Length: 521
Figure 1 (cartoon, rainbow, N blue to C red):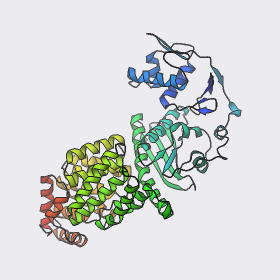
Figure 2: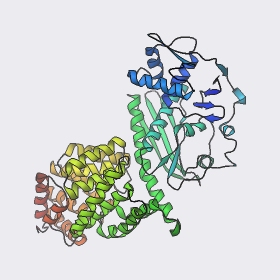
Figure 3: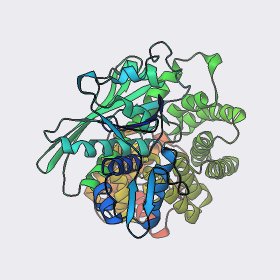
Figure 4: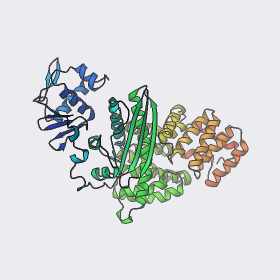
């Protein structure tokens, strides 16, 4: 249904507001509000009716309602002073007073591509950074009323992806142009100028919902990642949030891997700061000094080009921490803290940079107050950010706050079960389980950690402790020898310098390491 007034068109099916041929950006709830107002223009609408119909009865403050009315007026060229189209009647409600025409295009309805007649002739340039469009999820339920659920899911995913600092996300109003039409991801990529396209479907049956999501390369149409989610609809909004968070958490590492491979294929003379960071990433998160030696020159080059680049400061801080842990050179510790604090200053809206910075601040500056505050900021920005979850889980396990450490580690594993950084989550679980006497669970976590990062001595170190906890001392001694093979300079006292353990937590681990024969100093 098309609702026409002034020089504006409200396209209810495509969820678009157009002024002449120009698309007018409108927030989803403002669009719903406008449509309800125009469709019920013959009468005055009370506040309670609007909340029940537009917000489905959810609690809405007076300021939120006033903000929505103001945004609706602004979108259609009206104002609170003029009230030419949206009129407020004191103590009664509001009413749409413009003259409206209705049009059901039927068979002659223009297709999505016809609203973009020059799209094929003038494709948008692809940005020199990762970019994605999230297409409207297809509602394949038998109930057309479930359309709002599919749309809400996509809006939540777009909102979450927009918090990823390094990712450019096409706005909802642009991607929803494709709603209800057959799409080709290559065409979408050309028309919107994006590298990646996320598409999916929603099927609701009874009290269960099944959602599928698929990430595609817009240039080739190749699928990078896909997943299926099934949930009970006990609380529809909680289900939306949970699935959106899962999709976001899974997409981020997938895109990270794809971008690293892409930049490897670029010409060396075309590198910019972002490319230097990507080239460094394969060496950044292993926590091994030799890998840090490879990453540090690349990250330093990135900062030469862009001195306030939080996404370079944070991994550089981690690399200097890795070298400090291995060599105990104070210049590395000072550099780690410097770059971590620079990442915090420059990365107020970068959850990944904040997560890494909080980790380094805790370990190398022993400032857990700042670290915990930074983690909270990161998770407020993006509750599904893998780095913030992994880093905070590990620090919390060092501090003996086992319950929240386990919760965050498990959430990270649930969001991204195949992430190459998951050895950090398993180490957090290993410490938390060991210090609370759950040695079997600790042993299982350390085995998984070693499978992911077998050359990181700390994974074997926690495995040693778990074996002692199980009374398998001979195996623990063999594992302690692997620790020394990977880190010949290891001593218990030296390790205590590089990790901000709460004393009682460290004492339990240190006792186990002594039983296994690891040197004291």
